[in-house]
Every structure is written in C-alpha cells, then in structure tokens.
Image 1 (tube, rainbow, N blue to C red):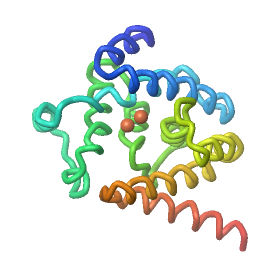
Image 2 (image 1 turned 45 degrees about the vertical axis):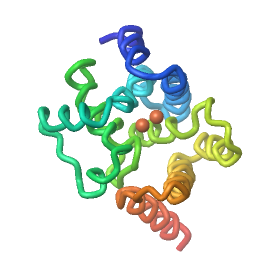
Image 3 (image 1 turned 60 degrees about the horizontal axis):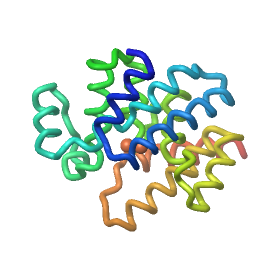
Length: 191
Ligand SMILES: [Fe+2]
Ligand SMILES: [Fe+2]
C-alpha cells in the first residue's frame, strides 16, 4: 500500500493527537534515515503506521491477538499499553503489505530489544523524539540521537524507564537488556 493510503487509514483509526504524533514520527524517522544512510521511504511508512493498533479497544485487541496467533509474554500480558506493538506489526504485514523487516521495527518500537537493527533503532528513537514531544530531556535526546545512534537509544530508553516507573507501570526486561547491552559495549570501547 502507498503512503497516502496508509496515512488515511491511520487517520481514521486514532485521535487527532495520536495522528499528529504518527505524522511527526514519520518525519523524524526520515530525518534519522537520512543521517544514518537508511531507506527513507521505508522509514516514512513505518513511522506513519507504527501506532496503528494503539487505540484498538482492549477486548478487540485481545480477540485480534487470539485470532491471529499473537502470543504475549508475561509482562505484555499484564501491560495492555504494550499490546499494540505486536498487533500493529501484524496489521502492517497483512493490511499494508509491509515486509518482515519493516514490521519488526513496529514490534520493537515500544520496549526496544537487544536484537534491534539500525532501522529498528531509528524508529524507536523517532517515536520518542518527534517534534510534538517538547520535554527538555527529549530535546537533548534528539540532539544526541542525531550524532550517535546507540547513544540516542540509550538516552531515550533511560527516559522511557523513568516514565514507566513514574506511572507504576511494569518495566519490560527487553528495555533493561537493551540498556545493559549498550552500556557494556560503551565500557568495552573505553578499555
Ligand atoms: Fe506506540
Ligand atoms: Fe508512538
């Protein structure tokens, strides 16, 4: 499916605020793709589509997951805020015709993952540093992520954990493992 078609479906599937966020993520993802030499069109498509499942009501989301063989892990089961990653990726493949590579970026966009590719990382960062997010720390994260991809991931992951703790949400181990991986890599480079 073409960008404009997906954008229309996205617009009809969510609030105006989230749609604006999605457009912001698409623009930011393209910006990052340019910096890091990745496919700009794929970044734009994944950016606009990444939250396609975010506003599906809980019961419908559970039904979709069940009907489509989507399995949630222990933490995901308890945190409905995480469901839209796997469901969104499934919709993106089946409805929008995304490749597995593109869909993986949607799967990883909320929690991050140690197996992230550079493409997954730009989507993860774009979600958290797009123009509608104006928090000071995030402005800093934007600058950092324009210079170093892993530093950018580290910065937004730390912020995401703080945010989740503030809301008394469960922390997904994938985010902790990702932070540990980057810190270990950084420490080894210093040796
Ligand atoms: Fe999301
Ligand atoms: Fe998002």
